[in-house]
Amino acid sequence: MLLTITTPEEMAALGALLATQLRSGDLVTLNGELGAGKTTLTRGLGAALGVRGAVTSPTFVLARTHPRPEGAPLVHVDAYRLSSAIELDDLDIDFPASIVVVEWGEGLLDGITDEWLQLDIVRPVGGVVTDDGVETRTVTVTGHGPRWADLGWLEGFGA
Image 1 (cartoon, rainbow, N blue to C red):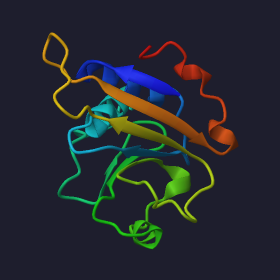
Image 2 (cartoon, one colour; image 1 turned 135 degrees about the horizontal axis):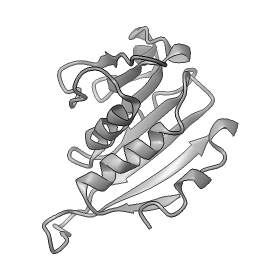
Image 3 (cartoon, rainbow, N blue to C red; image 1 turned 90 degrees about the horizontal axis):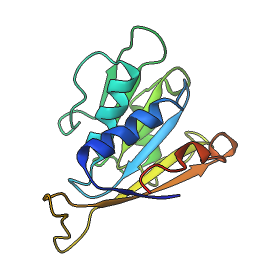
């Protein structure tokens, strides 16, 4: 499913919408260039889940766990320094008991799970900016496995 996101607030709202669908054991990968909006989306997700602690760009840590008062914690992973699924597995993340969001996770899921949600965020090249100074992004959402076969909950968002 292809979405058009026109503001950072809308990217955060996409994260909040995603939060309504997530449960323990879910894995989400966010792919896109620096500044595409991966962390903005994750902030919206974290706020909607009610996580403790600020969701920041995980530049200086590989993974950060954000506990919640109730429910599975959000584990935010920055995988750009990882070279394989083995290194992701070495982080010893409790995937079944967590909601895991992996930035730069493309190609690192071999053997981790058969089901995940993939969001590919494309930031325009060449300065395509709206009248109010915002770069429009396109987000392609792809579900992998039966858990994510139906993306109907995204209908009408970012259209």
